[in-house]
Length: 241
Image (cartoon, rainbow, N blue to C red; front, side):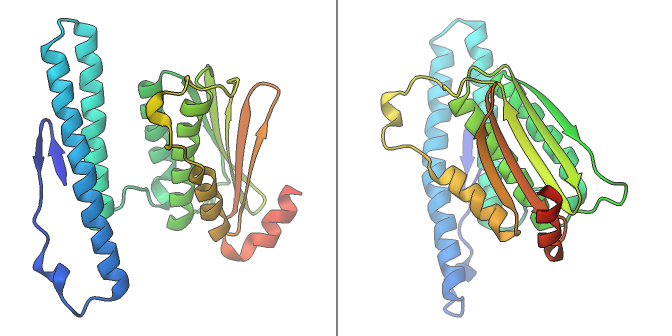
């Protein structure tokens, strides 16, 4: 599913999708990919059309700029969903590109949400990180920033810090908000995401790491610690003790 501007160009599933020799897991993956493609495409295209209608009925130049920003986000969402569902490319960085990818992610979030950010990173000269760890830290940063926007919209600053401590990589995301997000809207009913924290814990557990979420005097702090190597789990735990 590739949506460019105001058009949706859908792809026809390959005949290979229907081969009886495919494993049950692969058939299920492809079924889910088609469902995600069809469902998300329906709503993304509808949203793009509504943005067009809104622009045509308003002479407000500021509103038009906001519509363009939302349109660009929807197009980017479409592209990333296409990568995820096709399995042809990854939307997460490999280990060598993690710092650059996090900088880009944090910068885009600041521009979209309007809350100032500070990204600090430090590691040993022989710093190495595998791709699975890079993906986990990247996804947790995404989810952590999403939670700030939802639950601490009064924050004025979010500090993201990535450090190497002993045999651990430690990621902290700390805000200075009150923990109160925007007022709930009627359409929010039934759309709570308790799976967000649970999903982060599962990602970290797969690497033998730990995740803590705590209130501070100024806001909320999320801390994730993962071993630099699978064999360093106990050494990581001792280093943080």
